[in-house]
Length: 364
Image (cartoon, rainbow, N blue to C red; front, side, top):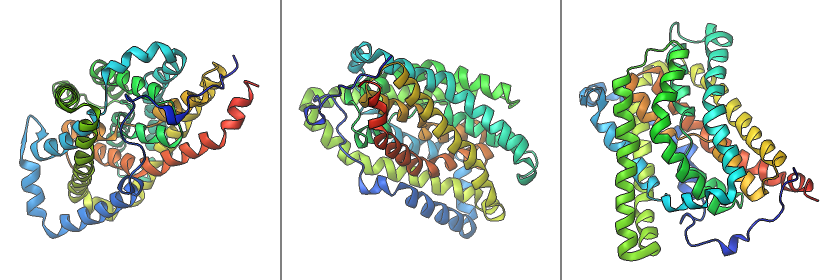
């Protein structure tokens, strides 16, 4: 089937589209801030180990209270952008939605588990600390088990993607995440021979998915009822920096706990990044090529590739900490995902934009 060539003019985007029009300076340099947080975390971990020990001990049912607050500050502002009324538009882009669902839930988690096992349990095993490979693989599985729900708005805007499709796809993924995340993670961790603490996993789903989604939608409804889209835009503008600062503070804590290990074995970070990089380009390519084969318009195929490849790293970090602990290899693996996310996804944006002519040539 030939791809459709008609894409909406971005100047006539509907008012229901995500409010954030472009990547901010802070977000564009997120990788630099993450790197600085790594350095700060390692330095603080050496300088004040007692403070980090006290923070680690503040937990209930293996959920660290300090990190839980930070994760909420990260996730809730992002979820405020989601309008579940957009689910009504799913049928309008059914082929693009189908491609993204297939990649997000049928390909990406399994490909990450496979790549993690091949690279970390076999190819890189002699270079990794003995017995730690399974923990790193668990982190990679958590990283790939949930599709991104926030930064994809930025990626879609940068590649002139259809905002209606992006909004409806993200809303649908959020609904599916509530019911699919726990069983999918449990299945893949079991296959990878990692013990699954089901009670903690279900608590994590409730704490970091269900409750934030409900809270965000209640706040969104109240704000929209009182001041409409302009009021919501103002609220998002105020909360945006808080969300990113919470992410960076969480990273400082993570690297404060793992600083000694990182200083001793910096190669581990690079090795964990390899399967992450491969799976991003693999899944983006599958979504993009399959969309072209099915005749999906480029302005839908481009964000479909980006949604298919990106990860909800905020949720992955939270779940890894709850399931395996702040100083676990799983938590470290999810943080590596944060480190590579922005530059890699920007490269995917560049690829789909440069290949638009090739993509739409099949419609000629």
